[in-house]
Image 1 (cartoon, one colour):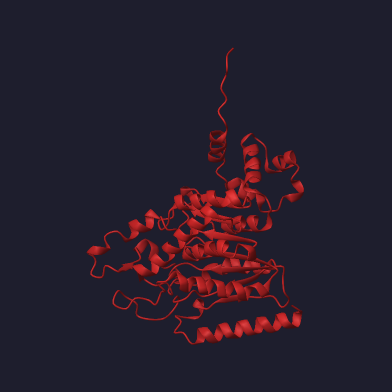
Image 2: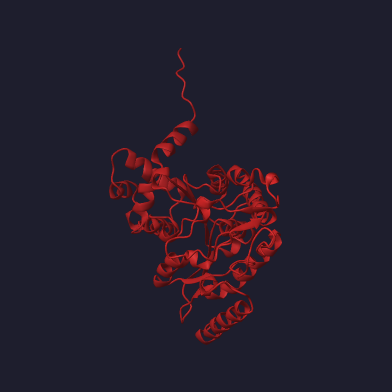
Length: 357
């Protein structure tokens, strides 16, 4: 595609997106899709899917940095989200209850965004992470990699705990977010978030998450970067680890990180304004993944070398990988759970037995 054709496509995409959202009763401008697009086609385009009951501005800090680094950045408004209304149990927000609607939405934006860069990356938080995970398997051949932040997956016991006791409510099919999850930040940027939802709306993502786990069990997908937090009260880190273990077997460029509880990083982890005081750390880890080509085993080799007293640079020199290092790689190596990694490697080694004569 020439520069003229690219520019025409970008102008049409921006205009058509605005027209479609002009027809909706949006809460305000914070709910609009974010299209950060360069005047000429760059090497990479990244598509961000925001969280369940949230809106595209969740990815503003990271999206702005990646745009400045040369990426085209697309953050579309998810179906049924960000719409104005007096929402309650009697009048629940218009969230889809069918995974098929989200799949169609994701495929439409994937097809549109293919024109915006030579390499395609998808990313998502919460339910958006589940959707990005589905694309990583449904369209693996079109993607360079996928990044999943705290995705909902089908077996999440924490989600089940969240909705326990709904039969005691006046409306057993409607759930209000617990206050700890619905506290608006000081500048009230979360005013677009819906106060609650019908169970079927959440079930759509749990069904999709279960499908992602099943797909990962039987086929290769795009490389995954899965991010969890021990402080997350909405999803199951166990499910995230299961997905990672299945993914890395077939695609060794998959990575996994779980934030320690001491960092107190919540489910809505993308921004400081939503409670993540380590926003820059998350952005650094993301850049480390995007900028690197290390396999998980290679990262593990470096991390194990560091447990033996070597610095990052010394470990890279030991393996002859200095030229492959990127500025943000030390952040990932520092944050990796090296103790667990060493224990897992030792457990997987064949037991040696002394055989006397």
